[in-house]
Length: 151
Image (tube, rainbow, N blue to C red; front, side, top):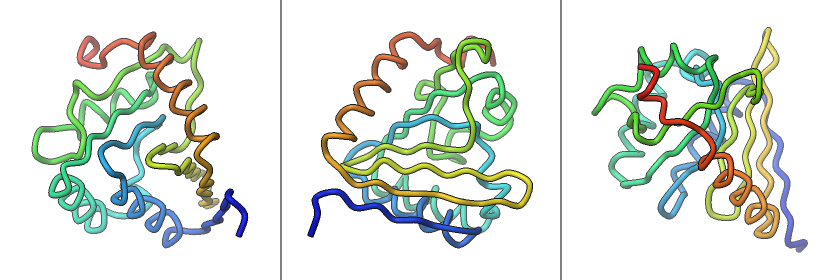
């Protein structure tokens, strides 16, 4: 079996599977997000996911731009979301474009995208690729500003 695995997902059920798979994270999920995946998967599913995420004591850090700011203002509340404001940072949209949702954990690099009825995602499993993506994330994290500055 090759070291690299690629899995494709389509539609609402596919995105639900990618999101649920993040619960396999050993300690942390990092990534980039425009936020708003609850609009794709529904409140009932997302609430169950958030509950499991908190039970497993996983940390979630995300980088967004102004597109995610309103969502964070509205939905990232203590006890109601898997994230807290300390774990969300922002880079201005004139310097950073974000679309969909990217999650990086363990040896998985997962990307979801939804727009105008198209809902797709992939999971790429490869330790070296994930090591590269984690290093890019950490560099961007150090440049990004805490979103609490804008709330």
